Image (cartoon, rainbow, N blue to C red; front, side, top):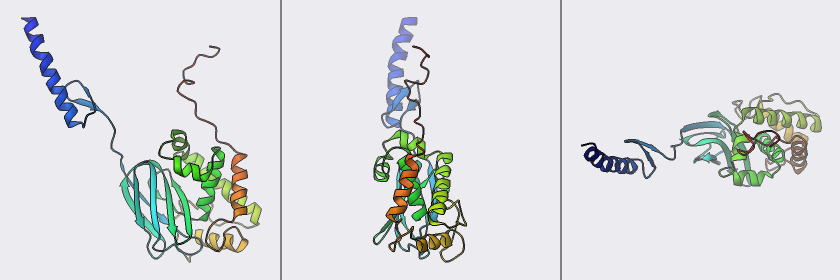
Length: 242
């Protein structure tokens, strides 16, 4: 009797598992109705302002994330907003004519794109022992970069370093140290007036891009403050002295 039950149940389990596999798109079947596989990326909402001291109006705004991407156009004031499915962190790229600037989002919410955020990415890339171009190209495949750039503390420390170095080098005082996430409007005091001051001091060129001297300054500053490497899986749990 018991053998007959076993003979009946095992084919039934196989059929149930096959049905589960089909419903899960070919993922691994566990039990009668469980399955594992790629988890859908959550919905992410990002917004901000793209400016150089003037608005980057009708600019192409794209977000490339650890998983997922999205794109939109900025309005006449350089403001943008996009909602899409993605896994953080995300790099924002804003292109208008000959100007291309980058920014970084470690959460949903307001993340501006300006020459200051461009310099922040230069600094972070140098901290990670790479170039900004390589950082941008490798974000979706390099877990170390993803871990470092999804850290709010890493990003905020880089933001503070950019402010400190710019103030010292160009002998000015920036009104808004939190330039990455502070909402602003072009033509109003705050982030935009800081951008105008930086342009007048020579830190931003006539195209709205960071001056090469400012880029070099942030590269050297980032190299001097490297981010610690996260421990590898083999290192975690290793017994000291073994």
